[in-house]
Length: 313
Image (cartoon, rainbow, N blue to C red; front, side, top):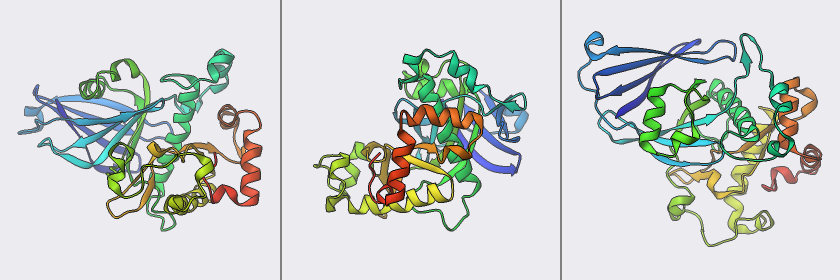
């Protein structure tokens, strides 16, 4: 078993991810952040070499997963859960050998029927993950901006690259299904973000009503007011400051509540907007996620203001 701990920022170009285990091995992964081509480099040392004493503890606790990826609550070196979670998603790089990733080739080589499907490892799921990963990476970069609404989660660290075998093993230990969901050498993005305690699984700690229909048609009901207000702030910032629109935020499994009662949208489905300002890769990815006439529907809702009032996509 091991304990995952992001310990400190070394520089603008480099961060350090530590993993400990009880086999007298101490793993250091240097995560090089170079022009949007982040890579995880792994080096292994014995405890003796590093002068380490005791690092035995459970790594993480599985919280849940979807088509996109899996989430684990991290633990400290004594095995106690901390207020941070690790999200890991399968995707593809933004760049390859210093050049833009050849997304068009991936798209062309995927059967049309499979482009429409969401399942772990599908092109549509990995495209969704790529865009969400870019969003949270950017959110980390601007984390000190006063304009960031409380309705977005705090991001602490970000990295991407081939999934290290030691981390994959810990994910499998936490949840056996991770073995199939994350094949060996899978390319992943991962980030550490704050733990939101009150979620759908625990009935939001009783902070909002559970016995209601979680549908778009009911969003004008007053029982949704608190969620809609938080959404409006998030949607405005995400669009105007970051250049994305959001989908699937009416889904109660994609938001939660802090102990102080603040609504947090921690797992939005994001698409870059507007598409005419995007590069070729981004345009192709956005087109796949918008679907037929999808961007036009967003534009209409943005223009009449309903997009900022109701989570209608």
